[in-house]
Image (cartoon, rainbow, N blue to C red; front, side, top):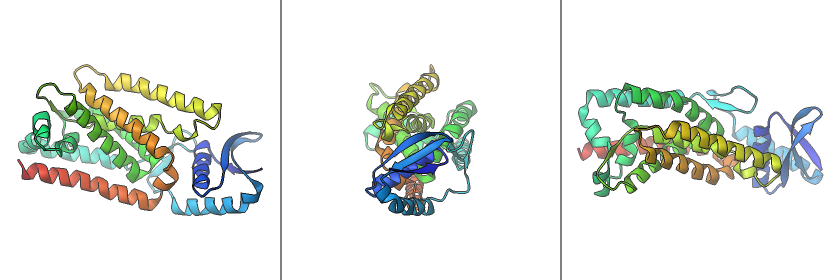
Length: 286
């Protein structure tokens, strides 16, 4: 067996996923002297593995706004600032145009009559500055780490769909007419995405399994602290968190592909479409 040294556990995991996708069996090991991380492969596949890693690095050059924070391998994507800016712009527009609230809020009766776009438009609306500030404060951090982990476009789209999933659960479980709004379901979706980031390695030894259980426990604790606040839409929060968990599990085995520039660009374009199209339908039917 031959070892390829990596700078961090995250980098070793990424390389291992890339190798496995090309049919090269690999395992991630922790080195003791010197401390670090290794990708272990068959000696016969060493040259092919190096070429695969080289191509993977060439195709997945980090965007300029993705930076390591706190420790090597932990990426924060500063594009989350753009997401915060969008929330603020929509809040300003909704405050100056009251029609946006009535057209975009999650109205369970209207959704039941076919206005599905409210599942998306409600994410961009907030009741007041305090509501907006709460989502911006926690969402900025969680969104940045989710996009740093999954990729800018992929993480943004996955969190947005999780937010819509939270609204869908809130609508489906409503026993009487109700209204909802806010990006908290999307924020909880980011938390779910981060909680299962090690799921693809849970069978490779006690270390990765322990990391997965720790991530799930930490994510669950944060959900209890942030998502079960009295007076909030707990169903939307739970739906967003659960949607994020499911998305994270489905994406875990494909991170090597999803982190490619083409995949992130496609997801970013789809995200833009899912922002503009529902709002166009909302204003058209107002």
